[in-house]
Amino acid sequence: QGESGASREELQRLETQYQRREEEKEAFMESEREGYKAHVASMREQLSEATGMWERLERQLALVKEQMREVQKQGERAAINHHVEYLKNITVKYLESSDPTLLRALGTALHISPEEMVRIERGQSSAQTGAAAAKMVTSWFG
Image (cartoon, rainbow, N blue to C red; front, side, top):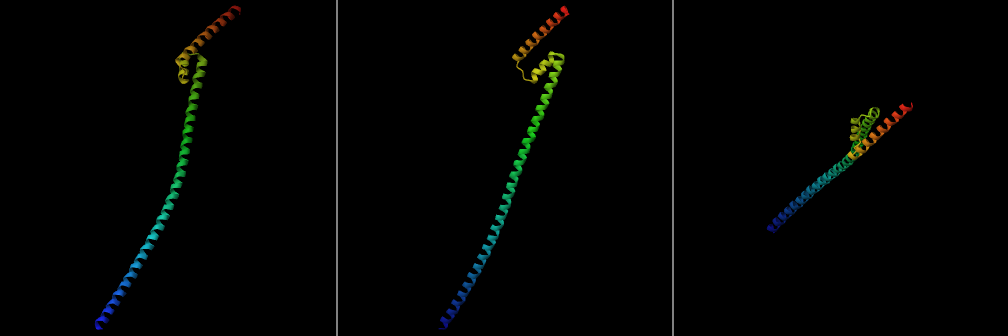
């Protein structure tokens, strides 16, 4: 029985040691689980913040795009206004002087085709002939 008592004590000691290790293992596993839970919670919070920032950036991008479109429209309007002012100035000068070089400048600014320029020049020529004839008739009957 001495041997059996020693075996029982040894068995008891091993069982106690096994239970202690199981408890340590369980405590370690619980600690790891808690650490992972905290890490997951932290990652969720960071994801939420990143998502919020992404949405803010998308809204800001949409605003910047809209502002760029508006600036582009304003630039186009300014260019059109400048072109209209240029056409007005050429037209006024041409009407004041009937200078053929101004007629060519006006044709270029208005993108008048060569065929249309020929028609305009013919019309100008016949108008000048009619005006000269009218002047001559008034001078005769004058």
